[in-house]
Structure formats: structure tokens, C-alpha cells
Image (cartoon, rainbow, N blue to C red; front, side, top):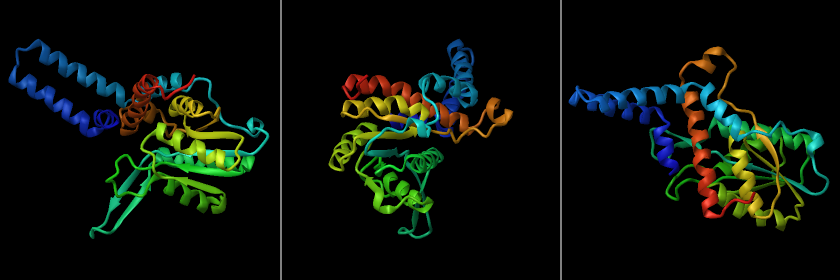
Length: 259
């Protein structure tokens, strides 16, 4: 399902859908249904690519969450868990030359984890994130996040790495016993604002009532053009929002959430 959602909210997906509607209209020029489909697809992608639209929906998903402060820090042995957000693989001319770069969303989570680390000095930081597919040759998100946090100043000895998960449910299932094994009493969860509600629910199902630390949205640069004009950033945010809209009921049906 995740791959299908990613396709439809990509520039490739938008182009394929538009071309299909145009072809239908060309083959059936008198078809009212074809013209209506072309209009509907055009409007849908226009709205999905205008940043203000998915941002408004995302604010509903993230309602009640705010910036984490030092006053929110619990007393006792605490861990900060950072959830991954995939990677971008860059290849060189030779088959064995490649880099796995974190996405902007994942980068924003790293910066929030670093900020929280400086605020509360947790006992451990868990960097979590595997690969979507077992045959993917990229470096797992957990490793990328660890390397970046070490570069920023988090001691490597304080970091635990999880790289075998495929989704948020896997992350909670795998990380929960890791925390117990290290005597952790409290958990601060770092992820994107739109992803936070589902993340808290799956960790709660594993026995952890985590405190939310939402990362700043990296896609909006503050200009009116970025806010109101169609852009790839708007389409990316629409993908994130739709992923959560579908993911929340799916996880609930599977019994992976606790509210």
C-alpha cells in the first residue's frame, strides 16, 4: 500500500494519470466521463501540490502536539528514540560505488533529536529504521541517523542502533525490549508531526507511553510562493499526509495501536 500511495503522490504518478486522462479524452472526444475525469484529475493534483492544502490537513493530524521543552523532561532514566524516514540512494559509475543520503524529513528528525539530547541529556539515544525491502542495498536509516548524530556531538557509546524494521510497527516491536534491557523508565519519541499520532499509538501498544518531540517540517521555506503555488514540496507533503490517513485505520484494524 505504501508503494502505491508514494507512486500516486509523485511527479511520475501525476504525469501518468494526466496522460491517461488525456488519452481517454482524445480517443473518446464526445465522452462526458472522459472530460470530467481529466478535470477531476487536474484539480486533484493541483490541490495536492499546493503546500497550504496538505498542510491544513496535516495540522488536524498533529493537533495537540507542540515543540518539546526542557520542562517536559521526565524524571528517571530516559531514552530518546528517533524514527527513520527512508533514504535516497545515489550511484556512481561503478556498481560498487553508491551513497545512501537521508531525506529532508529524516534530516529534520535528526536535528530535533540533537536538540532534545542537549536539553535533557538522556541515558541513551535509539536510532531506528531499516530498509523497506530486504533486497535494498542502501544503508539503513538507523545507521545514517547514528552517523549524523555522532557528527553533531552525541557520544557514539550512548547510541543504540536498530536496522531490521520495515515500518513503524516493526520499530516499536523491536525497540521496546531494547529499552527494557537498558533499564529505561521513560521514552521521548522523535518523528514528524503528521507521523506522531500513529507512532505514539504503536509504542503505547508495546507498553511505552512516550512523550512526543515533533520535528520541524523541512518542506516549507516561509515564502508566499511556496505556500500557494504548486510545487514538488506540496506533493511530497500530500504523500506524507495521505500515508497517515490510510495508515491510522490500517494499523487499528491490525490491532497494532493502543489509544
